[in-house]
Image 1 (spheres, rainbow, N blue to C red):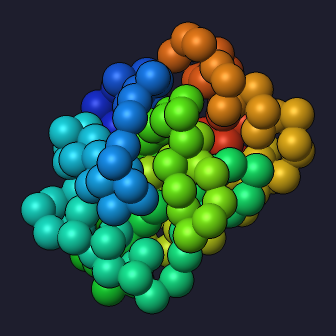
Image 2 (cartoon, rainbow, N blue to C red; image 1 turned 45 degrees about the horizontal axis):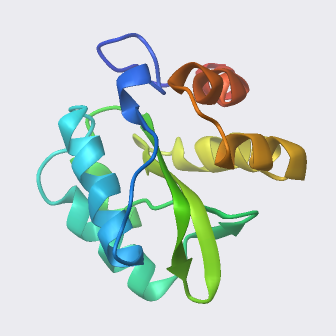
Length: 154
């Protein structure tokens, strides 16, 4: 079972940020790392490993979504499994693909595969991905990703 944030959720409402802008994918990834740090999910150094991961393997998932996360070695810097959602309505160029949603991931131990699998199940539905990209409230995003949290907590 995933360790929960202080709010009792893997995806806390304070971890959902809408209407953001980013200069480029590196800026978006830095914002993701800063959010995970702000939520108390990771120790210092984890955000830099998110950049390192992107330099070796793209975290672009498709459907306008990227899933920035740290390297395998960075799991020691994760305090608890936590997701953050950052929405960039104008899009961010991700190696030629427009990204409007970044789902920042900090996964404790071996939970990263569970997290990625649960996210893929939701985001592989193009209608769900579109609803996420165009959401206008934190509550709408939280509801769309509720099944991800349930999948992680089982």
